[in-house]
Structures are given as structure tokens and as C-alpha cells.
Image: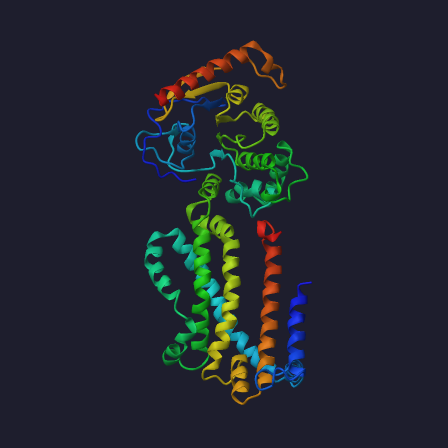
Length: 245
Length: 244
């Protein structure tokens, strides 16, 4: 049922192209985009680019999840860290991170490092904010209960704060997944020789709009799949939490 | 739960509790009954004065003092079984012993069949059974109970009161039990402490001079009714004094 509106849009798109209402110069027909996608997959051309892109996105994303969670929890538990980090974080928050790509390239070169850095930085913000807010909202009663049952102070973070915060962290991580894909593509638009962003940019530049859109469609499908797998995994992992049902 | 008020909550509390005694604490709302438990639990520090347990000063929370809160104190990410075994894991008890002790306590609080449920999937009464077992496995010297049945419906509360008495009879722990329910205070406590309105002081300590056996007959006895009335009047006096 959820597919009906999507199929309707696809059918309208194709009908508009076939009837000549939508000239290929404005938007190539859906069938030609799908044909381009099939040949990109058949020739295997798209796969090395996929690997490069997702290696960059995955590395940046994982760095953001690990450091973002640690930073968020530390900020929530240690007021000194909160006072030091919060102003910096709030000033980074509204910066459109892809706009920093040229700067990072000057600093870190035009290779993978600058791209991974900007992906990591972009993903960091939602992870830090969600883990910080989650950890701050942990009920004192749970901390008291753990202490009264023998948990020493230095283990409270691991035994209580982290598990209690997992649902919120998971929400921030989901946002970070989407951001990682966006910034991955944007970072590959500039001075890149591999990657899906590079493919989109190159095909667009030479006027192969059908191949360009084929890569966009391919990315959309992968993004959708990743999100679906993530949410399904979360439901299993966080079965104790209300959102799982 | 947060304590940000700076007003004096308790004043000159001097109460000695003997071992294996079941002391219930009643008093007007906001008199600091719970604060008293949290002080003994070591969660709060007294502004002046000292608290000691078996002659040793209380400096922080510890498994020698088990606490059962009114609600929402179970770890929501752990099943009933893992919640109960939490304290044993923290103490480093070996797995086989842990499993045996947890199974005993699941039977003690009648939770068979619900071991693998998460707190969210249990009724309020069952959650409190888990909380009680979670506390009992640590073998505390003293059991602190902060209106543990206060959020339950009347029926469930009655059933849990009977079980609480049975558990106390069978392993005779020292219990300090805060409640706002006078009947509950008498039905469970061997001594009932009545507190004054804020700042809370101990107004009087009443020893229950009749036996409450298992069964419900005691409730119909004239002594029960008389004691209930006496305690209620004592509380009402405080509520009215605070108002004027």
C-alpha cells in the first residue's frame, strides 16, 4: 500500500515523457534512467565507486558515532566538559558542513582524509546532541538504585547511563546515517576521481542526464535499504524500549 | 526525582531501630518521610548530625541497605531475571550461584513465568515484586521501603502487603517502611512512627500491642480500629497545625 503513491509518481513521470510533455532535455524518461542503471550495474562500472564512497562515509560515520557518544555522555556527566564543549558545539551546529570542504582540502589535502573529516564532523553533531540529552535525562532513581545495589561511581556510566541512553543515541545515529550519505556525495563533487558523487557530477557535466539520475536512484535505493536494516536491527536490539513496538 | 529545595526537611530525628524490627513511618504529605529513608540510604547527606548503621557511620549508598522505591526504579533494559540478578553481578557472585539465588527469589515473590519479561511488559504490582526481589538478593541488613505499594490499585496492594508480611516473617529482616496509608502501617509495622509536618520531627512512636497473623481477621478486631483512629487523629492534628 505504501508503494502506491510512489508508483503513481513513476507512472506520471513515464507518461509525461512518452507523451512529449516532458522533453528529455528537461528530464529524461524513467525508462531511460532505469536502462542506464541496468547498464551501469551490468558493466560493473558503478561498484568500485560504491566501495570508495561507502568506505569514506562509513569511516566518517563510525568515528562520529564513537566520539560523539563518548562526548555526549561526558558532557552530561561532567559539568566542566559541558561548559567547555557546548559553546563550540552550538556554533558548529548551524554551519552548513559541506561549505567547509574547500577549507578542509587546504588543510588536509584533496584525498580521503578531508572527505572523511567533513563527514565525521557533520555526523558528530546529531550524535553528541542526542546522547547528551538522553544521558542528562536518565532518572536519578536508576542511578540511586544501581548505587544501592553495589555499583561504584566509575561503573555507573557503563552499567546505567549508557544502556538507559541507547534509545536516544539510536535516534541520533539514524539522523547521522542520512547526513553521512548527503555529505559523502557533496564532498565527492569537488576534486574527486572516484565515488558516486564524482559519477553524478561527471555524468551531469557531459550531459548524460539519464546516467546521472541512475546513480541518484541507485544511491536512494541504498540509503533506503540501510535505513530499513538499521531500524529493523534496532527493534530487535532495543526490544525493551517502547518504540520497538 | 530531584531535591533542589533548600528548606529544612527534617529536624532532630532521633530514632533507634532494633534488628529484625518492622518499623513503619507515617505522617502528613511533605513531612520528609521519604527524605529520612534517602538519608539512611546514603543518597542524601544530612546538613548536620550523623546516621549510623550497626555503629558505623553512613557515608554513601551501599548494598547493606536495600531500597525499594515507589516505582520506575527497575532497569528497563534488563529482563525481570537480569534485574533481580543485578546486585549479585555487581558483587561478583559466580554464575551458577547467581542462577540458583535468582530462581529462589523468583519463587519467593511469585514471579514464575515472568522471568524473561521486560519491566515495560509487567504490571505495576509485578514490577514491585521484581524490585523487592532485586533488593532481597543483596541480603541487606536493613530494607528501606519508600511507599512501595503506594502507586498500586487497592487489591494488588493488599495482596502485596500480605506477601510482604510473609517474607518478613520467613527471613526477618529489619524493615523501615514509609507509607501514607495508616492501615498499611498497622498491618505491617511492629512499631509505627508518626511524624510531624515539615520540618519533620518524630511526633510519637506507637508499638502495636496485638498480633497480626497471616489472614485477614485482625482487620475486624477492635484493637485495630482503635489504633487506626488514634494514628489518624495524630496525623490530622499535624495537618491542621500546618494549615493554621
